[in-house]
Amino acid sequence: MKKIIIVDDHPVVRRGLKQIIEEEPDMEVAGEAKNAGEFFSLLRTVNCTLVLLDISLPDKNGLDVLKQLQHEHPQLPVLILSIHPEDQYAVRFIKAGASGYLMKEGAPEELVKAIRKVNAGGKYVSASLAEKLVSHLDGFDKPPHENLSDREFQILRMIAEGKSLKGIADELCISEKTVSTYRSRILEKMKMSTTADIISYALKNKLID
Image (cartoon, rainbow, N blue to C red; front, side, top):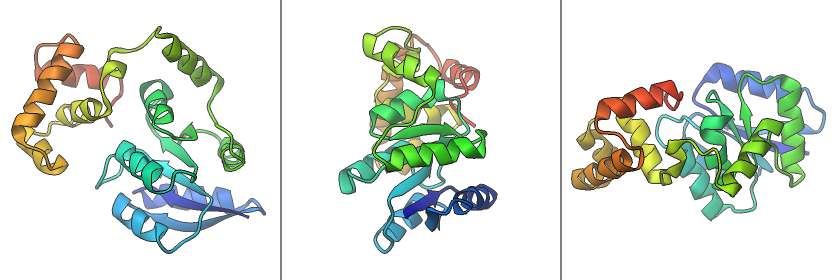
């Protein structure tokens, strides 16, 4: 029996995913969590064979959740669910250890197929994403934000969401000076001059909701 934990902050999404999963005779939802804190608490008490993880959680960046999972439960497969196009996020998450990346708007049968493949130890990516992964390995066709480190990418998104340097520093438990240094690196790597450039780029490339 495939035992799945759903991590998503939207109750309607969790309900829909649960309905799709439990229509399959060999699958069941072992638990649900609306944020990272609730998820890691749940993981201490519930056995599961796979995690369905939304990348936008209210208390922790999805990439950080994935990295913590990789450290604490390296054998536990994680299937990423996202509203963001795969060409913006998928490569970064796959490289960080995710077993698959799936758009929330995908068909129910695609979700079931992905769960089966990932639970069996495989990787689930679309044909177009597979091509992008090969291109990234070859160093071709990389959008500018793919040159950022994971922390730089996280801070770029937070800046684009309108958060102040102090607000970012408080949320990430680092100094405001460190955030300012990251901002400078982002501007340099992205060949930009202002925060407005960052916001414009993030909106154009659908890096923020």
